[in-house]
Each structure stands twice: as structure tokens, then as C-alpha cells.
Image 1 (cartoon, helix red, strand yellow):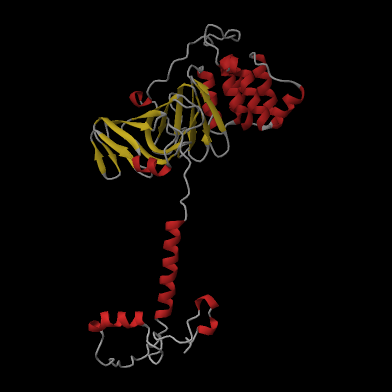
Image 2 (tube, rainbow, N blue to C red):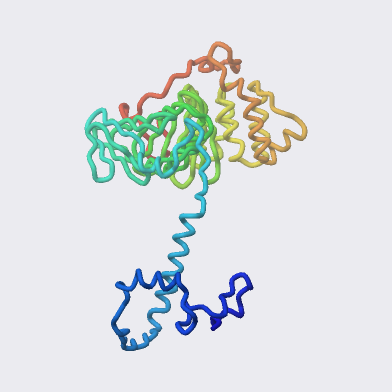
Length: 388
């Protein structure tokens, strides 16, 4: 007898034609017979059991999507285990922390006098100001706010500040009211203070900024410089100068701490909308006050610009001529900004080396920081300018 599949096998694997192992009618194989005798006692001597036929399972539409979802999850899980994870580039040592870490950590707050409040929590000694939080100082309270690793803010009484942004590039707060003394080390426009009257951009300096209840603001710079940006004009305020700003109008004219009374009065008059103040302002200006005249240029018409430039030249400024002069008269921004560097030797000159106009007794007055207006009651609510 031949194995049913014997015809499909190669010759070397084909069973013999007569084989006792497959057919009991074939001649007995002694080896198989001996093996049968050894295993005889283990032979199964009962009849084969019968089994009932199981009912066929019914397929349901409910299980099909579940099975498909399970298959997808199984494949995705296997892929996640197998697929290599992307490698994150190592951060340079000492580099900025991730924004999430900064937001979680916040800025350090130290209360020096009285009690400050961050959100709904009272801070008696140490605390944190997170992004989006407000800090309020009560009457008589003084706090110090660490601006990450670039400087500090001294927060005066009855001041309200909100932390808007803190990244490796920019630190930004909103001063709603009150007064701060800022001490910032960086010079890359890294610290910004928004106010109702405009935005103060720190250029690496020390300054005092105050906001009144009506939204008017004033900044005085004792080191470095700031840019006070409004909706229409931007004032450059270097050390030894100050500027006031009104809500909805932005900064007024920049003035030196030691500006003569005539310059101060005329500048305030012009800021209040009186263009007739230009003539007395030009007449009262000293060489150091070319900074005020420079700030006046973009706020007047072309004809008045020629008068202002002529007065600056009379005071010793090396005003350009020809096409460069005409570009300033036309109000081109680049030409105006280049003029600032030209006049810098005049407005940075000290009392001992400035060139004074004839009969100007106030020209050599030494610049001094402005007094604290809150201690003298010299705040002018109508103009939004202080230390007048």
C-alpha cells in the first residue's frame, strides 16, 4: 500500500510499497512488532468519544469596529516600541531655560517693608510672580522683583504690576499704576514695560518710571538710555534726561534734568498742543538742549523743521547739509535717527566742557537727578509730566 501523498514526494522520501506500519495486512516488521510489545500496556483500550457539534458563532456589526480598533492599537504600540525615538539636541550650558520652566518658576519676589500681594496670596517675605499674575504693594510697602538674571525692580508703595512675558529673549511687564526703580544690565531691548501711556524699552540702564491714576506716565533715566514708544512718536531718553507721556498721546518732548525754566515751560506748553511755544523754546535752548530740539523735529511741519535745524546749528550741532539736510526736512526716519549720533557730543557734554550761548547763565548748571515728586507734591495731573 502506498501513502496517500507518496506520489508527491521525491524518491528519497517515498515510503516502501508495502509497509506494516501503515497497513496491518502487510508483512510484519520485526522492529515495529518489538516496539508494540513494549508499549502494549499503554495502549488506549476504550472506544473513541463522540462530541456534539458546537453552534456557529454569530457575527455582529458591533464587534467589527472594535476588532479593527484593537488591531490598530496593537500595531501602533508595536511601532512605538520598535521605532527609534527622535533625539533632542543638547542645550548649551548656561543657555536660557525652556519657556515652560520659566513660566513654572516665575520671578522671585522679596518684600522689604510691609506686605505685597501676588494674586490672592499675601507675600510677607519671599514669593513667586508667575506669568499672568499681578503683584500689588499696599500703602507703605516696598518689594524687590528679580527680572530673571538681567536685573531687579524696586517696587514702591501702591504699585500694581503684571508679568506678561518671560523668555530667553524678552522680559515684559505691565505697570498699571505706581512707581518702579529699574536696574537692568542687558542692552539688547531685553526688558520692556508697558504703561497706559506707551511702552518703555530698556536699552541697558537704570531709571525710574511712574504711572498716575489717570494713565499718564513719566520716566527719568540715571544710567544708559530708554526708548519711550507711543502710537505716533518715539522719544530717545538718555541718562540725565526725562520725558512725560499722556494716555492716548504718547511721550512728549525729552528734557534734561537741568533744563532751564524757559525750556521746561515751553516744552510743556508745546506738549499741551500750543505750537506757538516753538519760538520761545528755540530761544531758551542751550547746547545741551539740542536733545529737546531733536525730539521736536518729527512733531512739526517742514518749514518749522528748517528753523529748528538752523537753531541746532547755531548751538554748535554739526547739522548735515545738502541732500542729507533735505532728507531730515522731509521727515525721513533714517535721516532723523542718524542726526542723533551727530549731536550726541553736545547733549552728553558736562558743565565744564559745553559751549554756552551768550549771556546764558544757566548753561553751566550741573545736571542732578530729579527730586522725588511724591515727597514734594509736584505732580501735574493735567500734563502727565513730573518734576516741573
